[in-house]
Image: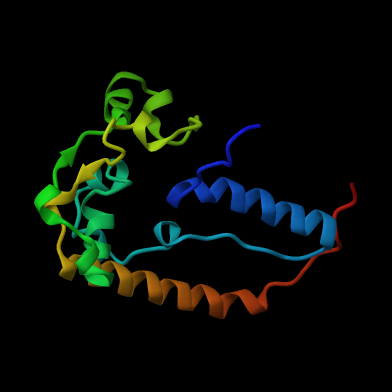
Length: 159
């Protein structure tokens, strides 16, 4: 018997996309999937983190640690904050297509990116940055929710 899948954070997106498609095809529902990291951020929030940190610091780096310092500071142990280099950075430097971050998606576990299971520079995190991120995500989500009711269903695709 196989163990249950371990899906978290960005790993949920592929599953959400499949479920949304299945609900559309089999039940005629219009379903959208989204996540805080796919929502637009204003330039002033984007500027809080380097482009490298935004691209490669996807788990336990400055972005997520900042959010946790804002949302649940008692759960963050900054004395353990470090900079964990992602193996994706090496692929990006070595391979033009494989390393571009969009042409091919690896089936991954966080330890594939770094043995510690974290990547990015958690040392650069702050609660103020986290507040700005959470506020921007909440505002974008609110706008998304306002836009959704105007969407209409086309006839259910035949299978």
